[in-house]
Image (tube, rainbow, N blue to C red; front, side):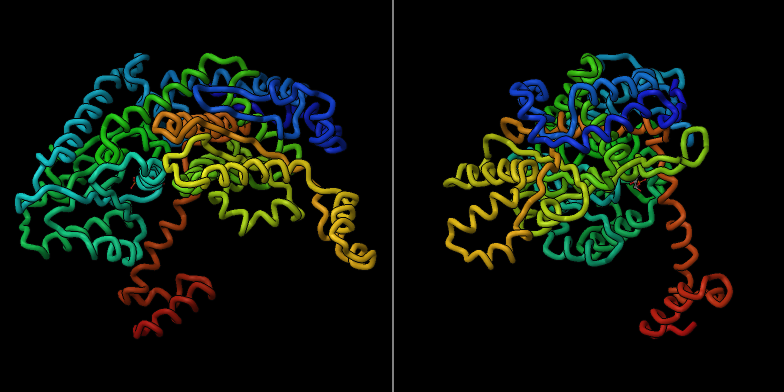
Length: 554
Ligand code: G6Q
C-alpha cells in the first residue's frame, strides 16, 4: 500500500531544513578536508559501475535524515507495493510492473488473478524468433530480398527508449540498420524514407494504444509509401509488424495479428523499453544483447531490493535529489554523459523524470506545497563544455549534475579517450574547487599582467566552486551496464515520487494539448467556421494568420 504522507509534515523534513542552513555555510572543500576517507565513505559500487557521491553537499547526518524521511514517507512499503503488482497507478487503475519484464520469471506475479510470467516469456521468445529470422536473412520481403532497414514508428515512450539505447550501443549494431520516426512533421518520415528501398524495409508500428495521432499518421504515410512500390496489400504482412496492447486496432490497420508483439497496461509508456517496444533493439543489436540489457536492469532491481539505505544506489540518488530540490533550492538537474553515443540519455530521462514527477497535486488530491520533479536537461561532454558549462561554473543558479563516463572506449583511436576522460574529471573538479581571487591574481601576476589589468579583470575570472556533482564511472559501455544505469534512474524517480506523495505513473498533463489540437485541426483544414467563436483572441488570430499564409480563408 502507498502511504499518502505529506513529506513536509514529517519530523525529518523539519530537521533537513535546519541542516540545510549548516550545509550552506560549509563547503565541499571543507568537507573533504575534514574527512580524508570521504571518497571511500561516499562511493558505492554495483557490478562495474561506481557511483561517487562524495562531491555532493552532503554529510553522514544528511544521509541519516534522508533515511528517516524515507521511513516516515513509507518508501519501503511503496517499493513493495510496486514489486508485488499492486495497482499503485491509482488514477489509471494500473499496476506498475516494468521491472517484471527483466526479471526472467524469478518472482511469480499475478495481475487480476493471472500470472504474467508466462506471457512475458512468450513475447520474449517471439521477439527472439523474429529477430533471428530477420538477422539470418530468412525473413524475406515481398520481392524475395532480405530486410536491411527497420523503421520504428512510435512517439514518446514508444520511441525515446529504443532510440536512446540503439544509439548508446552503436558498437553492437549488426547489419540491420534501425531508424526511428516519431514527429508528425512530415519532414521526419520523408527524410527517413527517401533513401530506403521498400523491398528491404520493415516497419515496426510501436504504439501501446495504437491510436496516437502522430504514430498513426506516420504509419499510414509509411503504408502509402510502401504501396507506391511494386508491393500489393497482401505484402504488408512481410513489411509491417506491430507492438501494442490493442489487438483490435492493429488488425484494423491491416497488420496480420501473427505479426503483433503484445505488451500490457501495467507497462507505462516511458518504462516500456524493456518490453516488446524494444523489438528494434533485439533486431538491430541481436537478441542476446537485448537480453543482456534486460539482465543489467534486473541486477539493479536486485541491488535495490537487497541493499540497506546506506548502500542502496537508487535510494541515495533519490535522497540526494530531494535534498537539492527541497532544501538547497535546485530547480534543475543536468545529466552529462562523457560518451557521445549516449547523446539521447538526458532526453530520455527528461521524459522519464519530468513526465513522472512533474505533478502539482498530491496523492490525496490536494495541491502540493513543496517542489516536486526538477527540470532535467543535458548533452554529452565534451560538447556541453563549449556550450552551457559557462553557466554551470559561473552562473547564478545552483545546478547539481550527474557525470557519466566509461574507463575503456569501444574506439581505441589515438589518445581520444584519455582526453575525453581528463575533461570529465577536470569539469567535476572545477565545479567543486572553483578558483579564488588570490589564485586568479597569482596566476595573472605570473603571466606578467599589470596591477591595473589584474584589478580590472580578476573578479570575472573567479569561480566560486562548491557546485556539486555525482560521477558515475563504468568499465565499458555495454548492454548490461546501460541496463543497470537506466534501472537505477528509474528507481530514483519512483522513490522520489513516493516521498513527494505524487502519482508518478500517470501523465494527465499531456492530455489537454492533445484535446485542443483536435479542436484546432478542422480549423486549419478549413472545415469549420467555429474559429470566430471558440477560441481566445490570440489563438484565433494565429489560426487566421496561418490560414491566410496557407491560402485558406476563415
Ligand atoms: C509515456 C507516455 C507517452 C506515450 C506516448 C505514445 O509514459 O504515456 O509518452 O508513450 O504518448 O503512446 P502510444 O504508445 O500509445 O502511442
